[in-house]
Length: 176
Image (cartoon, rainbow, N blue to C red; front, side):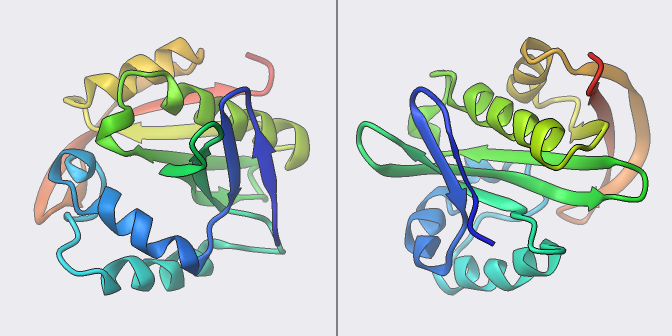
């Protein structure tokens, strides 16, 4: 399903395979992938392979992952979307990655806010979750700015790059 979301500065559209070259450039930066559950890409085919994985997350023709395009330059600057969607329990987990050249400019907040609105208004879900490594202070600032609530630390919750790590859980409810 093709879905498009718009903000003042961003155009978010359903991710497509032709984005792979631009996404490779973003995901091959170790600073960008430091807190993602993927290692930095080392060859361009990895960005094509990820589309197969992301396609598996799509369900019932629901757009699950978006390419973030800066409207003025028409340049792909990142991605955001759902790591999971649980319709039975009316919740979704979100994630975002932004090219390093665009850090600190409010694009992550703007993209996530568009995703939050889509989740509550279009998908009509009740809860949005974001799992963040405690050291990822920039993402924590973004979530706090967008009125996500810190719910606690999940100790040694998952493996990242071969090591068990703690994860901070943040959430936002439709009623927040």
